[in-house]
Image (tube, helix red, strand yellow):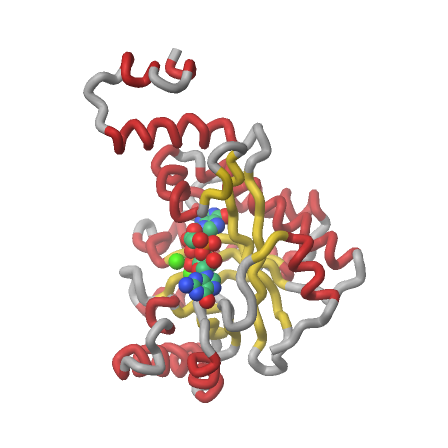
Length: 279
Ligand code: C2E
Ligand code: CA
Ligand code: CA
Ligand code: CA
């Protein structure tokens, strides 16, 4: 079988180049990672600029392979999406994040809103809304404390189906963010039609917002537009005090980034909220 490991791949796949060998190897291990309990969820605080307090956190998956160490999502999410493995992985992250958020609340911490990344493939599963509903029931998390992050490419196809799914999610009481805003292809009109709660301004616009006039203009416009549409604006990848000051001056609602904290394992995140860290 293919699973004998090591050099046996060379025997079975003589024409394979190094790259596809690496990919195949990764895929074989990725398939087993869930049952082997190799995934971890890290949490990165999202800060409310109105009061400097932690409003919530984004769940970011990591793969802890016993030999290879920590593998970042950038390295395996694309493959997980190609192979469909993103559905069970994403569902696991969703449940884990809801469970963890409920646990922190049970410990007496102020209610936080947990964000979970939902890949387009996951969002388009016919059972998706039901899975979200079941997860909320099972974990006992209040729906208003869950936010789903979807990217613009979710919205590219089958608008009526997406509207329907969004409406069902809204009826459940969960909120929705548009992630990486400005990097995709969707029309601005979708923002209003889908009635999303938060617009996450992609970090590529934030990176040199204090040195690049065009990026500054884009960020200013996105924040102003969000305000007019009554959608919250959230800037991602905020690393410096200068970027932060700029965003505050423009009236941005929330930020996320190294200027406040990196993503971290659950116990470290709990310490942070225990200490009541503020901006
Ligand atoms: P994303 O959803 O845009 O997540 C934000 C990324 O920016 C995270 O990378 C985070 O660690 C990083 N980041 C946060 N603050 C800063 C900062 O100040 N500076 C810089 N340079 N980077 C910052 P990460 O954790 O490596 O995740 C990468 C991407 O992988 C995510 O981008 C998301 O698209 C995907 N991803 C992560 N977890 C999941 C998941 O559970 N499901 C799905 N479908 N995708 C996920
Ligand atoms: Ca995200
Ligand atoms: Ca993002
Ligand atoms: Ca991104």
